Amino acid sequence: MEVNEKQVLGNEEGIKTTVVIPNYNGINYIEECMESLLKSDVPLRIIVVDNKSGDGSRELLAEKYGDLQQVELIFLEENTGFCHAVNVGIQAAKTEYVFLLNNDTVVEKDCVSELEKQMLRSQDIFSVGSKMINMRNPDKIDDAGDLYCALGWAFARGKDKERNAYGKEDRIFAACAGAALYRRSIFEAIGLFDEAHFAYLEDIDIGYRANIHGYLNVFAPKAIVYHAGSAVSGSRHNEFKVDLSARNSIYLIYKNMPFLQILLNLPFLLAGYLIKWFFFALKGLGGVYRKGIGKGFALAFSAKGRAAKQRFKAGNFFNYLWIQWQLWINTLRRFF
Image (cartoon, rainbow, N blue to C red):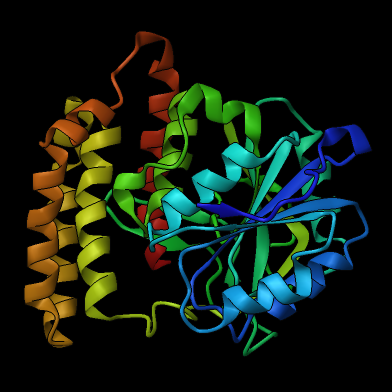
């Protein structure tokens, strides 16, 4: 791992937030993303963790931003995936908050300050999600917080709704890690992003863990981020995404749900996976989805999966009740 050599800014300069950007072949977006951050109305530290890009974005970053005092560039020697890259950035951060940001985004000037305002509401707030706007169609929402339902599906709240919808601050199941502020100290209590995910559903997983422990994930409607979407991995549905998302969906359930909760939701989960298989079969990806499910069970019951299992604690009982209510109510929200 190569790190640019210069003095690292800490929180002694009054900086509250470190932006962590995982980059992989983001040549078409990373410069615009960086320039928008440099115009922020609050001081920031910026860490870019590059997953061995081969498109020239690594060289662009070094040339344009390598000498900036507030920017730290970390060049990894292989593509280790989203989760490992952001964990490297989180561990390198020294500020109170960490703002995880996809490389295919542009932030409004007051985005980070709006996110920080939400954090001040309570020390129990773990994450604050931004209002992500579709970069190609800026009249439409891309994400206004992530939800998870009893069918075993995660989905973006507000997807393709009008931009002015979801204008209130409220609690969400999880924040989309493509543009979310996290309280760094709480990572010590619930753990970092699970690198077994590699990518996809890792933000639902960490939000789920925060909910189990009684921490809050909230939404900041005035924190605006424009998101291109699928800039690195390609189209919305491809073999890589379908396989990995299917695998991670099984692992997510095993890892976070106590056995009795799995039994309670089993009819919904079976229906959800059957519907998904049929959906992907129509796209010629049914076999890929089925193999991903198999990989999920293999991961869940591996030594690594068993070690990551969240053990039920009686003190978290009412947190599980809230989670279960959300699983049911979000099933209705998915269709209505």
